[in-house]
Length: 199
Image 1: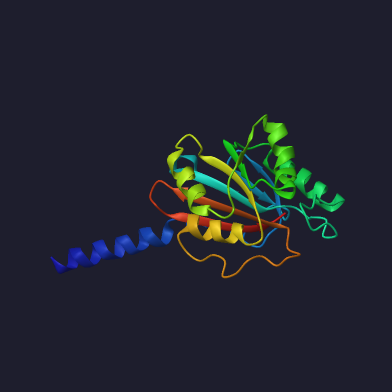
Image 2 (image 1 turned 90 degrees about the vertical axis):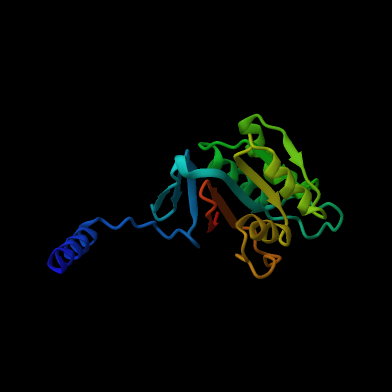
């Protein structure tokens, strides 16, 4: 009997060794090129495919683009900021977006404006002083399964950590840091994947 158990164990070891290992590419820190359907492409041609059957929700989170720091009250975007907002719309043009949330400031609204125009969508407001209300809203709306959230240097890390269920970011983004693009994928299994990219 022990001879058969040994043979069975050896057979399992051989099968396990022969099975092709599924490797998920590490895209963290890479520059995002585009998202087409469920395929995330980076500038160095790395491809990460999100398996549709396993996904519950996908959140795209960005801070507003470069603002005019010479204006203290309601600063608009600079030329570089407008270019970054256009880049955001290019990245998301070929993928599904069910809702776009933004705080009600010029810099966040202008960042979200191009993609809202392309998708013919209304920008939904949220209060950056009441992030719990936003998180509660995102949980209630089952029809919003692909959501873009535009916020600020302190709110996007906080929203990311809440959606991820762990501390992805230990502090706010630096004041001159505008290029973070975070993707939080919540799976039907309860697992939450976070991808921290640049754009």
